[in-house]
Length: 124
Image (cartoon, rainbow, N blue to C red):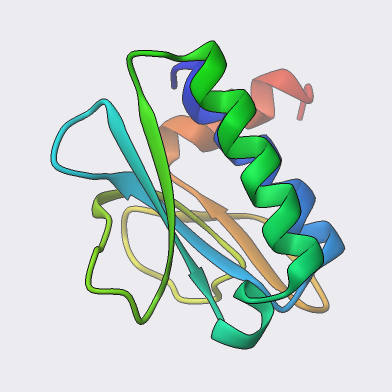
């Protein structure tokens, strides 16, 4: 997984730790240079403190990755992520994601490739 995805994932995990009711789906937009993050539920997505952190992350991410864009949308938005890369906070069991950590508030799930990288990074 590339460094940009690791940066996005780290931010989303941090937000999930702080706001455990949030759920995220990260995927590509119309190209591999556009990342779309779907966020739910809507009341938490509209949380002012979360929104400020999201804006700060977007500004930082886009200044470091000038060839890429990142867009955060509510799950109710017409704009949707294509080709979901990873999910955080969902407890479904789709074939392309794996459980890596269970929490009382939900699950963090990653693809097989991400699972392997996570296990290697944390020496599991």
